[in-house]
Image (cartoon, rainbow, N blue to C red; front, top):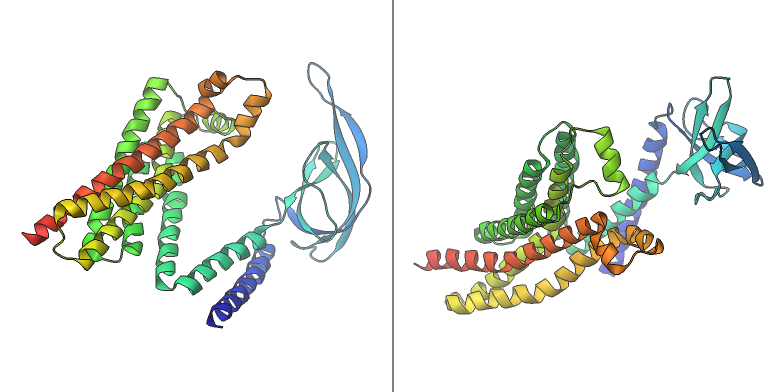
Length: 372
């Protein structure tokens, strides 16, 4: 009964958080850029052709429909309005009556105003689901779950509020990534490693693994002559911030992308070896080292699978696009975007591989000092 009671309480907290976020998001929405609206009625769509002004004088299609909307944000909140909106033919966003959306507009020199539904309003749904997962984790795991979430929150804060803004200001992406990895690793280990005396072991083993993986990744980037400009996002970023070192940003992504899995392996090896010592304080050091390496090799198999599949999943749309263009397997491997994903996957794998012996040897070395 306690288990179901915890789930029920967690769901109630998440529901309350959903409504709180919903109220605050609607109340404080930036109404100069868009309005939050609820679709009351949606008329049929009709095709409208506009002549595209360019050298080829091509035509493109848009779809127009009449909508009855309830305004939820801004000075005209709760008012009903009727207007015509447009969207590009083939757009995946389908307007469903009863749902909430973001209404945007464009004003032209001749006085015309063109309205369109930009996106679904999903802020409270995202916040509510995130809160539900967090509360359930704390309810079912207690203090350990809370500390894990604390470490995760600190990691996200370091990346979003420190590393990324400093990169946009011209700081070195690689140096910032190294500093962020050190901070994230330290905070995470402080939160999840039970034995204080073994925290330094987990930290040194993890940092050693991720830095070795980074060195291998940097070598691959240099030998393969990757510029970090593959993909539309990278090209857009380079055009927006021309002084940004895109190759350095690629190397920074190698560091950040591998630290999570590397920490997992480092902490797992440290925890298992500490359990052996707790069970038998006089366990031979060579047997302790062998146990740590064996545990690490077991964890390595699943973690490599997780890491590689994560990178493959992120690059799957681009891989499908390349294949649909009729590229051969060798052409796919030679594509710079795929090559970047391979670098990240291989660097992360090598980081995991180096983390196991680095952590095990650090543990045995510290244990030998303690016994002497």
